[in-house]
Length: 118
Image (cartoon, rainbow, N blue to C red; front, side):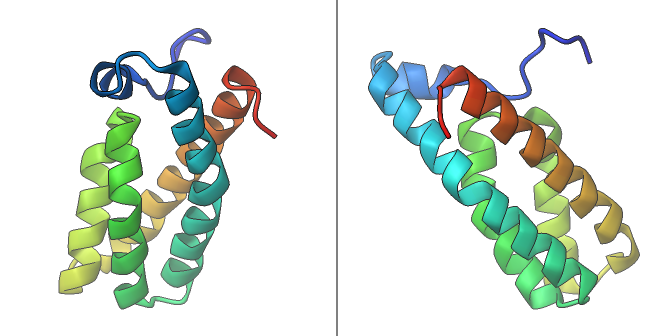
């Protein structure tokens, strides 16, 4: 991935909120504040093979993933969610959850920098 390519975008937020930079920054701050914890909970549930919790946390993350258009995660989070819900292909979930957690971590780092968040 090129260095200048963003892992997320704010296009839908910009369109729906009349390009309000304060609102976009606020939404980014919520992402930065909550997604790392939810992602860590997803990883923990996966490591414990607690598929009900994997489903719960994957489902909880979907809206934020869609809102910031995290394209590589949009289908993946839904696959994790459905596999956990149906207890199917659970052997594939660990790799997907690791990818999701890594991607979220990178997005949080970039958002903190772009929106000057701590």
